[in-house]
Amino acid sequence: MKHAFTLEYWQDNGGYAGRLKEVQGVFSQGETLQELEENIEDAYKLLMEDESSLDLPIVQFKQVLLETEGQTAYRLMQQSGFIGCMEGDGLFSENYKSFLG
Image (cartoon, rainbow, N blue to C red; front, side):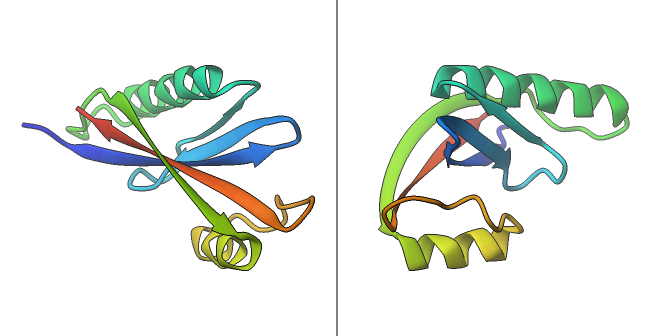
């Protein structure tokens, strides 16, 4: 059985931060997108070890980029529960990764 997960990620203090949208509690950060990807996968695996009774898959990664203006991104961040991580010139690059397992 295949499952899909979405990694919402954004630039934060010179690096990247993100979360798995469909799996509550899977958050991480990294200095590069590659490091974030590895850290998110590790966080997911750790959660699965703790929640061994759940039947959730190991994930693989695919990247899609979406750029939006600051106000829209801020609203998305509020809805996602991430507030206060936007700084700078008002443009915010929000990136999404689809995880296919």
